[in-house]
Image (cartoon, rainbow, N blue to C red):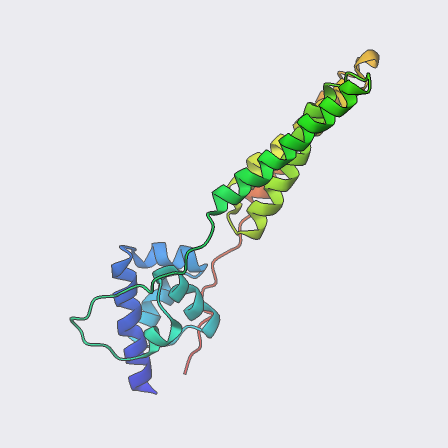
Length: 200
């Protein structure tokens, strides 16, 4: 068991340095404290399998690579990943589809004698909802604050412009507390797990 811990410790150090990360930076990415990383690298404990998988994915290697002995001079060679469609490309394609649909609906309504430019205004919240879903699914939650903020203001604008004859400008006042709540909600962060490693 001590050999296993030693091998794992050496490989974690090798992977961390190959990614040019400090213990604190790696801990932040794995949602653990730098003290936990230090324990793993000293061979005092071993991370659980979920953490090993996350670390392996980050470094582009397999979990087996982390727990298998290697020559000290051997360089880390990330696995060749199968070609996948770019997330950005997929997102842009989906958003382009939404706006193409909005243009189509606008033209059809115009041909029917209904000139309704609000179709493009309604496309904004629909686009932002789609963007929020894709962003959340792919784990890139850094931009969700801005997307949700845009969504709230987009919905308020849509309602205001739909009922513009009533001049409900007071709707924009609702956006202020909503924006504050959104900022506070996205400021809540999970505390790093201090000692969640397997201690054997």
